[in-house]
Each structure stands twice: as C-alpha cells, then as structure tokens.
Image 1 (cartoon, rainbow, N blue to C red):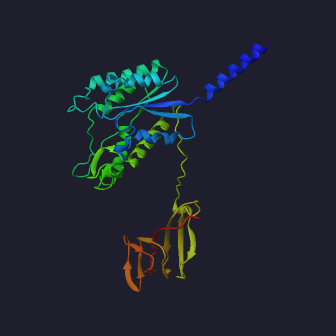
Image 2 (spheres, rainbow, N blue to C red; image 1 turned 180 degrees about the horizontal axis):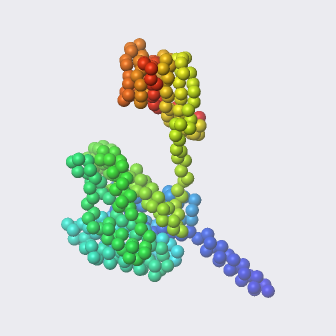
Image 3 (spheres, rainbow, N blue to C red; image 1 turned 135 degrees about the horizontal axis):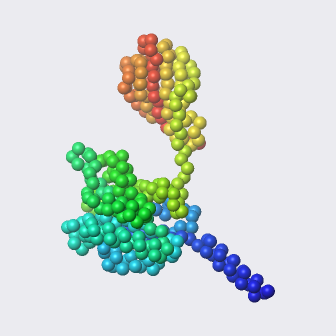
Length: 362
C-alpha cells in the first residue's frame, strides 16, 4: 500500500508539472521579425514586441528569426533543424519569410517561387511531425509610395504563394502582408515614416549621418506590427490566444443626449448641448456639440486652456480679444490661454458648433 501511495503521489506531481508547463511560441523568419543587436538600435523586429500580448500567460517566445535569411538559407544553415530540436510537442511555430526569398539580385539568399513553396510545405510537414502547431505568415510590406502618395507593393507573387500553401495544407494563416498594407495606407505617406527606421543626423549614435530605411521597423513600428499579428491570431480562434483587452469604445447618437441649457458664461438665451461621453471615466478629451438658438450667446470670458470651435450651421458674431468677426459654416476658431472670446447668434437660425478641448483627468 505504501508503494502504491508513493506511486500515486509521483503520478500526481507529474501531471501537475505537465499542466503548468509553459508552451513556447517559436518564431522563424527574417530581419523584420528578429531580435536586434545593440549596434543596430533603435531598429526593432516585430517579434521582439510580440511577448507583450501574452503577458500573464504561460507562453514563452523563442525568436529564431535572423537578419537576411530566406526559407532556403534558414534550412541550409541548420536553423530550422535547431528550432525543431528545441521545440516540444504542443509548441507553436510562426513562419514568416519572403523579403529575402524574392531578392533576385541577391543570389546568396534568393529562392525561386517553386522552391519557396516547397520550403514552406516542408516547414509545415516537419512541424506537424513533431506535434507542433505551425502558422504561416505572409511577409510584412515595405514602405513604398509613388509620386501621387499612393502605396505600392514590391513583394510580387510571394505573399500569394504563402496563401496558396496555407490553403493547400490547411494551415492557419496570418496575412501580415494585407494587414500591414492597410495599416501603412491608413497612416499615409508622411506619418508612416514613424513606423520605419527614419532617423535624422544626430538622432542615434548608431547612425550619426541619419538613415532612411523603409524595410526595418522603429520601436513604434515593431509594436504596431506585433499588434496586427496578435489581432490576426485572435481572429483565427486557435488554442493559442493573445491577451486582447476588451474594447472600451462607445457609439453615441446626438439624438439620445440633448441637454437644454442657458447660454454658457452668462451668455443668456436658450441652447441645446450634446455632451458626448461626458460621463466616460478617465477621458481627457471634451467633445461637445452646441446649438445656440436665435438670440442665444456664449458670454465673453477669458481662457486658461486651448479650445477649438467649429461652426457647422448658422451665422454668428465672434468677439475675440475685443475684435468682432462674423463666422459661418466651415469656420474654425482656436482660442489659447490668455485669450478672451464670446459668441452670439445672427439671424433667425440656430448657430451650431462643435467644441473640443482637453481637461485634466482626476
């Protein structure tokens, strides 16, 4: 009986150890994903930022990605075999190549399309043979805009080749190419530079003459790409799930929140305020629509903060620091600390304005 009791305890301990054992997410890829050396900073691979989406979980990130590698060289150098030797059954593998595979002018890394697909198939087959969970990723885009500030792609057929292998092998796909394209187009030609390694002379001791790199990411860009990967993974609804915080977004229609008020700052008359998100805790931004009905006014008053009025409808007379100006639809009014202003309606129509300013969060 004593031996049976000891055996039962050992089995229970073994089961507990297995239950709490962390799963590892292995990353196989190129420089867009890899960990950077100190002399390359602030260049950052998006794989470095991925762990933030698994905080509090028993998920470790093993970043095997390396600069300049294609599917072919990752295999030839033994990096794929090393990844397999390190992985345990139940681990996950993110596989993202293409930047270097499609570089025909660099024979040390170029992989023709047919060989590229064969290598992707091998990755999937080998991973499953080791009881791992492979996920294929299309390559993230490079930042490219034409003279009309329209984005264009330079990866050719390679992203679609990944999609074909994913369909053929029934492997989960993170379409980072499409997601990153949409994100960079959303940012636009100028603002998207912040996602990549654009440095002015003196910005970094590693690049004293500055740098204009539209392939590799800044810390901000790496964080954005990691977010896209996490969101894509969450949408796949696999067993591996990132920590996507619940959204606190709100949608409000002004028809639901009209608030009758007299003209503010002792302006007099009747107005209707639409205090959007006024009860939202921690929100720094005040955003309000106000309709000043005929004869109503915002009283003349001094300012200690920045505030913007934007006229949507009607006509009004603005008094700014003692000077009177007529305003109408499309007029934007900025007041700064030290200014004084007031506003009253003209004519027999409502004067409708948007009001925006920041207030301190308690």
